[in-house]
Length: 137
Image: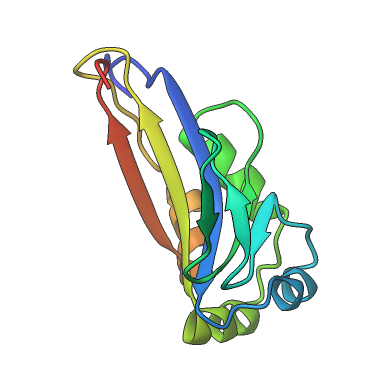
């Protein structure tokens, strides 16, 4: 990236949501244990200690390593199958995306996606979700 400061911090994860989602089925299909998951109706405690009931089923896998956006997304997707049939089946039944939290220290930080990472996302039919947090958030 020409001259623009890199983002202060980046977090990346695959998210799969659906009312009738069975986390065990997703784990079986993808062959990877999730970072976190829930069935609809499960209760869990938030960081503040409040008890919350899951409104839908969810399955999440965090990249779990430091690095720029391309490094994290490619490391995440490399852990997962690339077979488009598996991803088509998932996206027919569930909401699937690669979700990225981008944390800025200043006002003009940035990043870019490489063609390789864009094709890894496209082959799997995955949307890319970006939440961008300013330095004051």
